[in-house]
Image 1 (cartoon, rainbow, N blue to C red):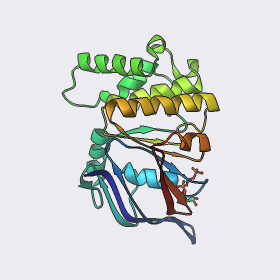
Image 2: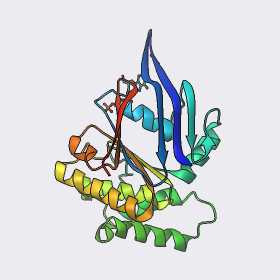
Image 3: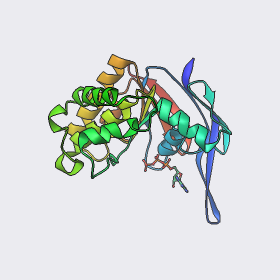
Image 4: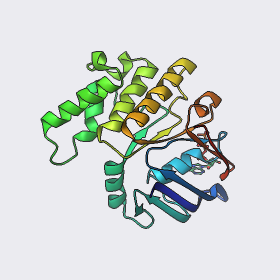
Amino acid sequence: MSIVRIENVSKRYRLGEQEVAALRGVSVSIEQGEFVAIAGPSGSGKTTLLNMIGCIDTPTGGRVVVDGQDVTGRSPDQLADLRARTLGFIFQTFNLLPVLSAEENVEYPLVNIQHLPREERRRRVAYFLDMVGLTRFAKHRPNQLSGGQRQRVAIARALATRPKIVLADEPTANLDHQSGEGILQLMKEINHHSGTTFIFSTHDARVIAMADRVVRVSDGEVVGEESNR
Ligand SMILES: Nc1ncnc2c1ncn2[C@@H]1O[C@H](COP(=O)(O)OP(=O)(O)OP(=O)(O)O)[C@@H](O)[C@H]1O
C-alpha cells in the first residue's frame, strides 16, 4: 500500500481578479521508505504539492490519501491530528524557535503528546541530537549555530515524534553546497537506516542526483519520473 497517493489533484489560487493554477491534475504515489525528490523550477508547484501531502492546504479537486486516510473533507482538527501523528516537517528557513536551545527545539513537538513521560522525552531528544551529530551543541541557541547545524536541529525535531513521513521543502536552499550535500547525505542515511519516508523539493541538480527517485514538475504538472537506484 502506498503511504501517499495523490490522485488527479488540482489547486487553484485566486489572486484578486486572477486565478493561478498551481497544480493541474497531478497524480503520484509514494511507497513507504522511499527517498523522493520533487524537482522543478521556481513556481512549478513543488511547495503546493508538498502542502497537499502535508495536509497544510486542501486541493481544489482530486484526492489526497496519506497513510491510508483520505484527507479530503477532513476537519482542521482531524488534519492537525494526522499531521502530528504521521508527518514531520523541515523548512528552507529552518524555522527554529530563536529563544530555545537546540535540545529544547527538538523537545518542543513532544511536549503536546499525551502520555509521553518526561524521561522518554529527554531520552528521545538525546537520541536524535546524537543522530544528527549535535550532542555537543545541545545547549546552543539557533543564532549560535551554523546554517547546516540549524538544519540538523530541524531534522532531529522532525524525527522526534517518529513520523512515517518527513516532508522537506527546499531543505538545502539556504545552505552552501557542501552543507547542503551533508544535510542530504544525513537525510539519506536516516532514510536507509530507519525506513522513514522522505519527500523533499529542490531545484538544485546536485541534490536531485542524490534522490532515489525524482518526480519532475513543471507548470503545475508532473512531466517525468526517474529512478536513480
Ligand atoms: N497562496 C497563494 N496565492 C496565490 N498564488 C499562489 C499561492 N501559493 C502559490 N501560488 C502560485 O502557485 C504557483 C506554484 O507555486 P509554488 O510555491 O508551489 O511553486 P514552487 O515550485 O514551490 O516555487 P519555488 O521553487 O519558487 O518555491 C506559482 O505561480 C505561485 O505564484
